[in-house]
Amino acid sequence: MKGNNLLALHSLKEKYAGKVKLIYIDPPFNTEGDSFEYNDYFNHSTWLTFMKNRLEIAHTLLDSDGLIYIHLDFNEVHYLKILADEIFGRKNFLNEIIWCYQERETSKRFFNRKHDSILFYAKDKETDYTFNNELIREKYSEVTLKKFKYLDSEGRKYRLRTKDGKSDPAQEDDNTYRQYLDAQSGPLPRDWFMIPFLNQASSERVGFNTQKPEELIKKFILAGSNEGDIILDFFAGSGTTLSVAHKLNRKYIGIEQMDYIKDITVPRLFDVVNGIQTGISEDVNWQGGGSFVYAELMEKSKGYLDSVLEAENTDSLTQIYHLMLDNVDLDFRADLEAIQEMLNDGISLEDKKRLLVKVIDKNQLYYNYSEIDDANVRDLISDSDYAFNQSFYKEEEIDGQEDQ
Picture 1: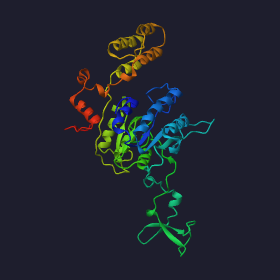
Picture 2: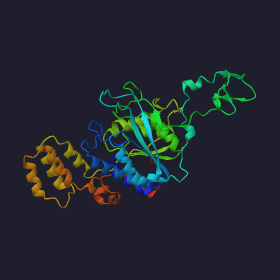
Picture 3: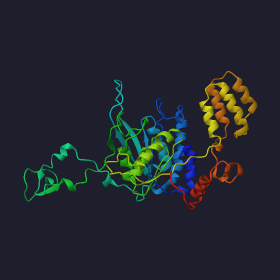
Picture 4: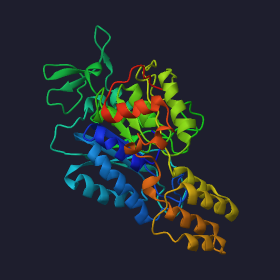
């Protein structure tokens, strides 16, 4: 779904409240160099408010035994932990998972950073929430594998163990037993993963700077959900969560407001449907298939907001403002004459943009479903889009409706 993720989440509430089994999000880390394009000028308190609004509705969407993973780095993880404790309950915190990767810095003035943190919460820790530990068991180390040095008559590898399990004897006797390698599940999962970043030459890369490896997301989805469960990612980005969910036979909802959803995210999902062998495809024997629906929140004033932000000079901004006067719902408290005077003043272009952004009524960025039968709105949408909306909100069947 393309559109403002907060409004999109609220659009989902009526139909999906209490139905999402697992949420994974990789929100902006609020760093100066972050590639996050929603707003490069978040201050700390604004970022926390931004996250609070979205996590609150996410909590509503989660099933009673649902789980959420919040992926962050050192810049905000400690502040977000306090906020998440408030929303999900401190008692429902399960883990801080550490994703270790190769060093990305070469500082000689502090310890080089080489990990991200993923906060892991249950909506209610007392429920029988899903945690498929057997599906994410770790591989044995080379040291351990070397201990399985014996072969039986059928060619199965085993090691000798004393019955108290404390040592590996040199020879077999009445006090020993055989531990077969193929009968072992591997060590229980730990709260840190050593998974490399995607290198520039990786076939998995789709041209997105903060793209995460499918192998990482696979662990979260396998552990916390089962086939057919609904997975949600409302910072969909390059679509890694959606790609992995599709390959693991989960249902999924992805939300992204940036235009790259059309150039990166959606084409990637088409590749998944077509069985392109990247990421975890070989590991899970993915051969393609399935379908997905792509939808956009119907823009109302959002286009003017984008035009304001993209304006390159005052003349362009003034032209946009005059169009806004005729076509946009503005804040009723705005002094329109004063705004025109300020546009003519010598204040910076960025300050002028902030002024116009402030007076656009944010409740009118998109059309509300309640307006769908208004004559002026009905003329703007196709019969198929009208039927899709009726089906989505009223759960009616649509004859001949095909997934896109």
